[in-house]
Image (cartoon, rainbow, N blue to C red):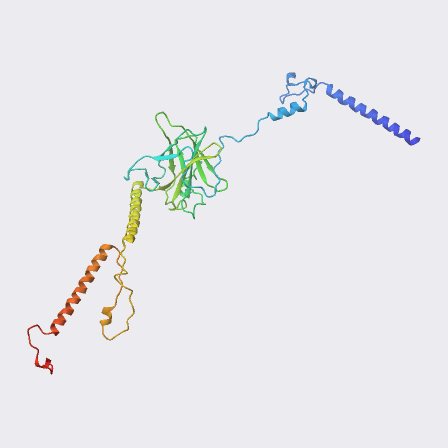
Length: 372
């Protein structure tokens, strides 16, 4: 009985304590807010405060609806990430928009700053000189489309390495993009990127529709290092990949061409075209000679080893094959061989005539037989 009375007494005291705490909480909520002052000591206007009794309560459905209407963080359209392919594709792909590149026609004189060889699909240009590139598409690409220019090495043993400028030209340059080989001139919207994985660099410029009366868009490219620079390209041939892409980085078309940055583009273009023509003509002549090569099996037989003798008669009878390249030379050598055979035959006839007596003369007595 004493324990139950003690428990009841504790229960009443706890109930009284809880009620007192509840009353204190409600009184604190209903009390006016504590005034707040600015750092300079002035009071904050009362209009900035809202009475809690006037604040509407939100149910779960209204709360979920408001949460769903909050904007989701989307990637910025201006943030264009370069491609992260370790081995970029260098084959042409016009795509659905039939992407084409055209270069201004120029000769091979020494004064030209850039010239393009359609035979070699190769651009020859000077260091840091502007090269106009005309971009042609069959229909207008999506809005905010971009053009990206990327430099890669042509040979397979160097393709994984990123193309960069040599240290000499980098140190002389004070721009923010001094390590980039390719630059876009005449546009303030050009952006330069470097892939964080492959360290490959590229430059982009927004695609602009052709102006009135024109069917193509022109961009200006500059190459900021010579192909022979030590510590840079170091005479390794490079390719320039020009792609048409969406703002999200989807490739719509691709064109590729070789580039040589040199001091005299016209002279180098002429030299390389002549070498290509000689090589092509040489391969054609070799193939033609192979097709026209005569069958010498009927004229000559393989040489057979003859037993050595004291005289040289066996050597004269030995058949030795001789292969001649070209029918004209073969015909000439055949005439010489026939002439030598004819001379040898005439010599044999002269020897026979000297041994035999001439017709109409009597034989000598010693030459007569007993029967005579």
